[in-house]
Image (tube, rainbow, N blue to C red; front, side, top):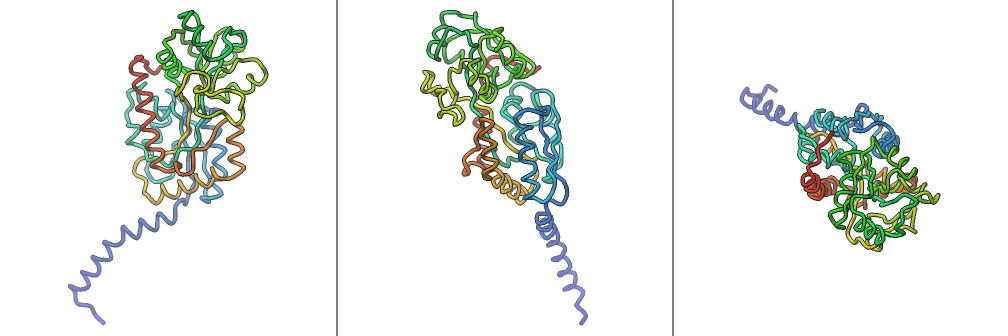
Amino acid sequence: MKLPRRKFLHLAAGAAAALPAVSRVARAQAYPSRPITMIVPFAPGGVSDVLGRMMAEPMRAILGQPVIIENVGGAAGSIGVGRAVRAPGDGYTLSIGTTSSHVLTGALYSLQFDLLKDLEPIAPLVSEALMIVGRKSMPAQNLKELIAWLKANPDKASQGHAGVGGVGHVTGISFQRETDTRFQSVPYRGGGPALQDLLAGHIDLEMEPSSNFLQQVRGGNLKAYAVAAKTRLAVAPDIPTVDEAGLPGFYRSVWIGLWLPKGASKDVIAKLNAAVQAVLSEPNMRTRIAELGQESFPRERQTPEGLADYQKAEVEKWWPIIKAANIKGE
């Protein structure tokens, strides 16, 4: 039967209008159809690199496509994040990173992108409390004694940290503000060299992720004054929290999250979020995370909204400290 021309054109227009919606559904159902790249904004071996590689294989099993790690280091992680921001928002480029790369760099550098607006959150992954430690021969035996000693000896102590503008550096500045103490800040090219000098007694203090120190604390080579968290570490239950040790509320941590470039569809974000939640819930993964001295975020917070809210709160906490101290990225 031959359709009247007007009716044919009307049907054809309706079919054409429906095509974009159909193609969007088809694309979402087909995703992913090729390998996914996860950009780590640091050199191999750091916490985000280790976690990214731990997650890559189980994510491949769930998504059906390889997850390839690409290390793009430099400028406290901002170079790698910038590369992810400029990638298409099609779900095939992921941006994994830490407090440093996805929060602190916004106050340290004049970035050509907005950390809160130019990335789509997928989920927060893990967090790790900082630990306040001292050289073995420090006269103070606990945190209260340390603060008293620092007050009695202004500018005589030195705190090593893994680089200008990093979490350890900024934590040291906020520690001085909150305890009314003063000590020298000594930057190193990474946590390893700083730890070696602390063990050798060339510097007095460090405030870095707990896993940096656990082995040396257990061996009696360092003094652990407190964990900067609300609860004690499961892997080191004998070390007091800051609340217990005399500096209540001084909670500081490094954390890792996962993002996409802006523009990804809700379906793609939901599929990736479901994969992340499934990986983090696996008993083997939970054990490996705990062995690193880290802990996963609670399941109800492992959402895009959970990461967005947490990242914004961290910006509001850290940026004023960095700007007040006039710290600039090197």
